Image (tube, rainbow, N blue to C red; front, side):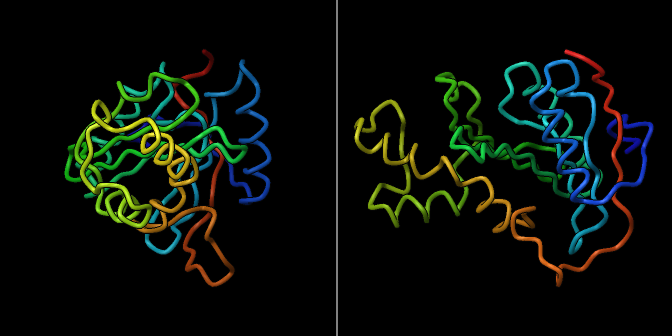
Amino acid sequence: MDVLGLTDSAPVSFSSAQEIIDADSHNAAEGLARVYVSPELDGWTLIIGRWCDPCDRGRSDSVLRMCEKLSARYGQAQAYYYGAQGTGSAWMIAECGTVTRRYCETDEGEDHYLTLGEPLPYERRRREELGLSPSWDAATESQEDEDEWAWATNDMAPEIAAALGISPLTLTAETPVSGTGVLARTPCRKF
């Protein structure tokens, strides 16, 4: 929490935090003001809230620096966006202080400007499963292949999170938990 400048933490259950963060995400005045910091979950700590969105146009550079800083300290850091109502997915992977991959597939139309690094092994496997080339250049890909990939990546963030660590969508009663989750204020109080 110190590394990220989070303050005013208060213990809260995962289910209560989910409701609060969801409500905040739909409220322009408070959308970036709070995050949920989970207890340790199978060796991972999740920070959940719109403030961590790697494809948010106003925050993408800050989230990139945040992941670099956290990965320099802890070895790895990841940031995800998942629009559960079909609005896309994004992922950012950092290791040892460097972002190795950022990919966004949302309805924004400018996502390609945020793409960094080489595709992850998971991305390459999924492309092969779809009958697409595992290596690709968006500038030379057919519209049909581009559309198929966009459709597949729309729900991919939780899959990549689970493949590389842990996804909040795959937590169960058997997930090892240590500590207490908190709701915390971000340094970004308002837009």
